Length: 461
Image (tube, rainbow, N blue to C red; front, side, top):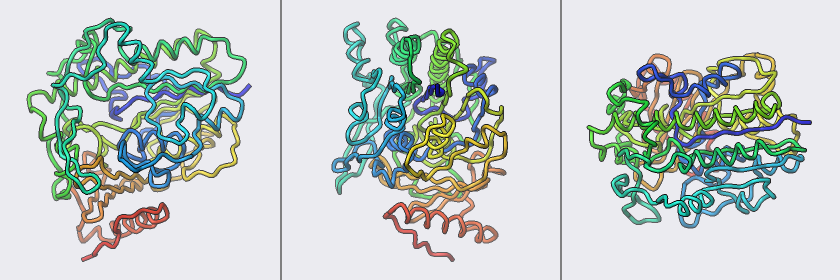
């Protein structure tokens, strides 16, 4: 029988939470153990620093410019009929289950695309929560209003801010704990076919509502801010200050940043414990060695880096994600070669020995994972069309230790080897002209092949 798949995804988790310890408290002990027993993809990049585009791209292996799902919600932008990994595996005889938040936009909707062996989503949880007296309406203090621009009109919209609140109900009623209980129940069922179980947790996405036991684990006073905290890059692109994440950063009370960081660690730790429950269930049912486990997040979280809050940027803390593959037979390895979320679908299919009649933009790394050979380096691309805020258009290429960002008017160039915190924008430096031109050319060629619409006719002085 083919290997099973457990695809475990968190929402808005920073890549550097893996192996982090805050006051001698590990943030992700379960994830760390899987990384040490499998493959830690230390430089994995999301295809878009926004939930729905990232998740839709990750589910289909098609980048947001091609699958047309580039924003979370924009009137007139319709979901497209693309084949998901869920459907590919179902057509190859897998029982497929989805438990957790969905945020994958397809037509027909994912839930209706195949007969799922199990399905629990936000609606399922909210129904259960209401039955037990748990409010699913965010606390008004955890929402802030920022400016947006859509369809030729300015508007105000509420976004989650960095205010922290406690979840004062029974832990079993916390959304991600409830989802994981359903996932464990599914694992413990009798299985006559290989299964693919997609577990999609909400943590550590804001609003930052934290169960007290987890809030107590991480002392805000022990949080150490990174060098880029509240510091926009020197010579940075001026349009960045109008973006959604910059607006949210400006609205954040300076006194609560440490609480927000501690809450991010707390919620990430809670999610890690849920992963531990899943791993324990696989071991109890003797399925652990028969299962490919893939762990990642849809995108990152800036938490005040460069003065920004939430995701919605191309800086490392927003676009780079944690990622681990664990399966019997994989060569234990930490891989520092940049890879894309677009590589996940073809890699998973090859590791499961599933052949599909479809070509993918991303590369399969299955042979390297199985043989322990170095990955063939190739450029990684990402796109962001904003979340309706002004100044939010972004295109990115990462090649080796270099990152180049273009928004149609301004550029940013970072040497990630000497400047991993992206403190200095090197765009326009005479001694790097050839390097910058080459990155711009590669990005332009790639984007135009994806039917991109922004201007790449940059003036080179």
